[in-house]
Image (cartoon, rainbow, N blue to C red):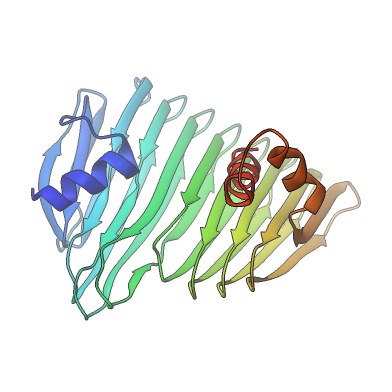
Length: 306
């Protein structure tokens, strides 16, 4: 494992020189470290294109780390990871991605993750993306997440991308059985001429399923973002989609939340708000001794944490 990978791991997965429990570290398309634990087994996917992660029902409060790093240009890393979560398990999955590019060629990571979450299981999935390096080559991260939640399963997704990724397309598809819950919190910031597209599609097929999609984003400079969410309530269920965006400079945002109620007892709602930072907010902080730039950054930080 090279020094760039170690630096990226500190940012995306709180690396302190070692991971406790199960982990797999991917560097430039290759495995550079892997360990299973008594309740979490990590196996190579047939054909060597990714992993199968099996979480036993006995896993309670355990964490598995599946970070991926690209450390140079002219790398196009594609990986397939399948997660099988046993009935009643309780697990945290940390699957961040960092792309470092000091060259002229493109550096890209595309992770295709499939989750099969058993009855009554609980999953917290944490995914942080970041781009680094001084090269002129593009840094791209294009994650695809497919989720199947069985009865009474709960999955929370906490996804963050705060800097340095020139282009990203983030696609999430989910199917929920009875009483299953999906909660997604997305935090996103783009700068310069970066582009980011988010595409959520959730099908609630079981009675009393529920989904809560919350996206907070900041588009700065000349960057552009697109947000699209589709919630389909095919039975008695609840669904909520919220997209809040702040424009700074010449940033642009397109938001398109969509709802489909296929049942009389499907209760669905969406909210979308796009605007700039209010001048009075900045002035108030300036009276406390902050510069305009410091005040703007403090407001942005608080907004993304909210």
